[in-house]
Length: 115
Length: 412
Image 1: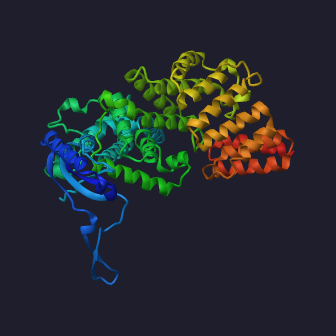
Image 2: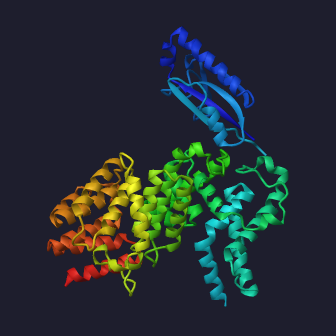
Image 3: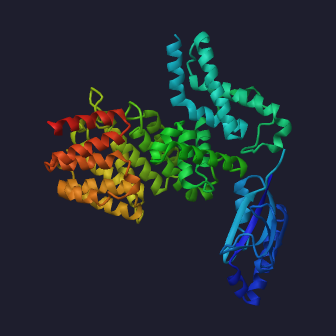
């Protein structure tokens, strides 16, 4: 078995525009996803919007600069994640396909294991 | 003696490499480790076949040695198994049966579906299959794709790393996933066939082993998916194109053009197997690219001679093909067909429209097709330059000989 991180990306402005009812619906879908995949789930969280993010970046002279905002500005921002366990990539992709991800999509990354 | 051993090992490398590798991957679960074990087996063959004699089944010998080596390595590393990327469930305690050559057909199919996994970039899928399933060198794969060797080497390494690290499984997908996975596999098999049909480098025009492997793989897919129009189309295309194999080379090894081939020596068995498959494949609307290419091959197969070939029908089929498959090479073939349907002047115009296509800039067929139309138009100075250009670009010896002859003709 191996672990994979499912990164959920979405367009924040579109997600913000979701009506209260639609947000509730999305929450329900995540609950259903969690129930259906309980055996594979190792963790997961929704994140606050990138407007609340703080980034630390080392500049060329080695100093750590603190800035407001996400590390990389992208059209679709990281909105949440799940940590899952799966036998192989096909199994991981089958789980990732079920993750509710309106106005965006997901990325599946294998977790690195050190000797 | 040593020379004959070296020849036998080289031959086994061409013919058996994929079989040996595919069977060994099943033991190691790791492609790089399997490649090392297979290379090791070939090295041992060089050392041992001289004294022990060349085995009657070199492939089985190599498979046994490579798998035995793989089992040793896997046992030694079992303590750090968790760190090893695993493609397949490993055999718990390999018994003597494990050393028997396994079902190679299944293994090759597994390997090809792994190489053609959608999580791998399309251009890397084909490259990986040619390297791993067909044992082509990185340089040969690069030429088949019209890219440089370092670019291709980086592409293959990256793809192999992803298979291991992301754990792309080593198996044939379940039936319900097959249709969506099949197109990538067909694309790869088709390239495998075209690479074998006109070997990109070396002294042979055709590499029979690649052609036969592409045919085998397509037949296996046809049994797996008897109702798939694209599979039928590809099988028809391979059969109808390969039906001309006996006539593509003259007695002296010279290239014989389709126009000059002795059609009485075309393989009628292959043609009569191919024609109904074309009809089958064309039934789907709109027809797929392999069905259309097979239909073009069928027009040739059924034409009694080059002169009475229905070129307008061929142009019509190419028009449909360019629409669903706008590749520069298809556009080039269409331009050549236009020249045959409407005369060399029209053909030259159609070819010149492709002159700025970057993918064709290093492709010898564009230059040789231009040369041919220019020669027919009596524009010998320009024809000579175009033949010289084609000669610079072609790396296939048989083609080069043909081009040199044509060049000599226009120079006199």
